[in-house]
Amino acid sequence: MRWYINKLPELENATPIISVCGDDCAVCPRYLAQTEEELHETAVFWQKAGWRDHVVSNDEIRCTGCGCRPACSFMLLPCAWEHRVSACRECDQFECEKVRNTFARSEEKKRQCEQACESPEEFRMLCRAFYEKEKNMR
Image 1 (cartoon, rainbow, N blue to C red):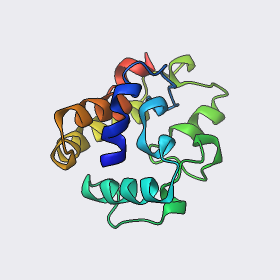
Image 2 (cartoon, rainbow, N blue to C red; image 1 turned 120 degrees about the vertical axis):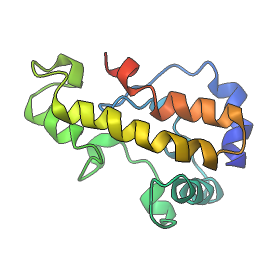
Image 3 (cartoon, rainbow, N blue to C red; image 1 turned 60 degrees about the vertical axis):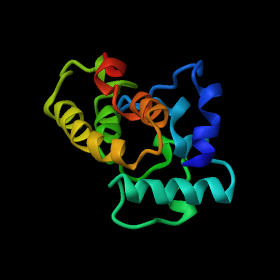
Image 4 (spheres, rainbow, N blue to C red; image 1 turned 180 degrees about the vertical axis):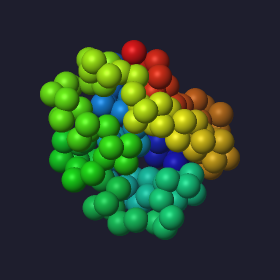
């Protein structure tokens, strides 16, 4: 994503914003994309990285925040609400099967993401965004 690669220098020192699933929203392209062009380029990348089976609309790729989504892809958000915690690590059942599955599914997607990236720097920042879940959830 050309627009994302151009933003990498300013993202280096971004203060983390950790989601329930351990993603770092502060460096997430969906969270950062503002223009129609950036959203479309992000949607194209999501398909290329294997996170969607087709290029979705800009409205679908636009981040509306975890609390606004009807379903969480890892199903951790509804679980956190059910257990009345704001983060999985606060739960008495941490590290449960859902969390372990989240870590495993995330790791499975990492290789395809790397292949979709235009540069090692882009991949490194996407790793911070999506593949440091275990570190971020502890």
